[in-house]
Image 1 (cartoon, one colour):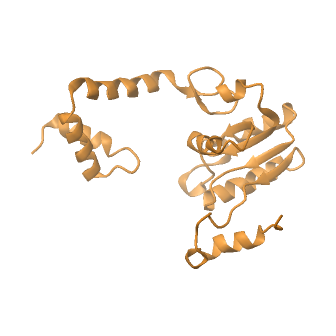
Image 2 (cartoon, rainbow, N blue to C red):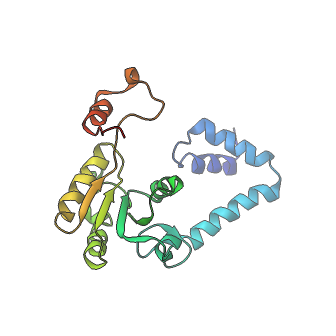
Image 3 (tube, one colour):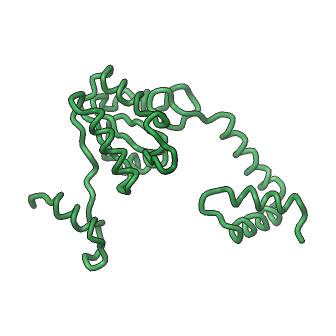
Length: 197
């Protein structure tokens, strides 16, 4: 029904996370209607990012240089490292402007079912950074799901005695209602309660 080139574009777009067949068709038809220079600008941007962007040698963040701008920033607190699963998590934390230390991107979370073992993540590099760079605190900011919790527990065990290990607080979101909170979230909110100032 569609030309092979259109079918190929639809197939490639469905490989993106969160893009199903319908969305892929919608995007394809948008690109076909768009001016040629606009569509080619997208193709060029994809090509450039694949050629120029790499992982920071220190922390694993995305960068076009050997070392990312965060690791090069002399104003950052070098005694603290915040551990995240992916560069997107680092961006979320940076947006808060609350953390002024360094980061370490693992590249995923432990998941033996999916074949992700400690050797597949940047865990040894983290331990090396903590041991060799005077790090006093490691903030574990892995996702609050099964794999993220397992990864945090594993890292806490590996880092025990090398630095203070903390975990991001978890609990009720601001603006949320108690009646809609699940038991795990509500339980964590209760156990992590703090005194009112």
